[in-house]
Image (tube, rainbow, N blue to C red; front, side):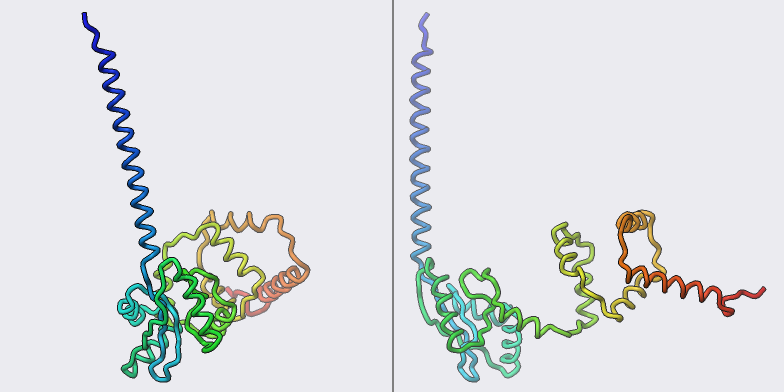
Length: 255
């Protein structure tokens, strides 16, 4: 009987080899195509632009855009910072808009460097730019001067009841991660509360029932804790006031 298995095996091997060569060729072509697309993307041109105040022609912002018309529209509708928002609101109130000027056209691979250079140039000449970063991809560290300016502007500012309610509804039910809890604890550690803050906390907690699990949590956190001499003195004074109130004639119940 004729055995065709060697012929079939050889034919199968040749098919596998041809398929493997075809896959390798497709992979090589795909790699070349990807590299060509990446090179074309890097060779594509983009713009570095400035936004100037139409009232005095002073440069207020430096940015990058592929479509300057769309970028200006985005600035008008969704400003990138609080300072930009206030500036846009001032211009809209008098029926004006910022002046966009393209200061340089560069390749996409170079835009980060060029934007940083233009921001540094205008910071050294104009000074008060609305950019909160040094430029590039927008994720660089915020300048110390900008942080100080934001801190001074927000110091003592009282939030409206509507803002407080929106914040509460936005965070309602949100679970914080252990890392967030640790950062919050470190940020508030050793910070004294004002008398008004203490009174608000006491009023909010007054009459609130504690569950057994919450009581056990408080007990375990305080177990073995060493109190300072000042704290012990405060506790003794508080207990003495409580005993004095109980022993006063006004507290005596008449039957």
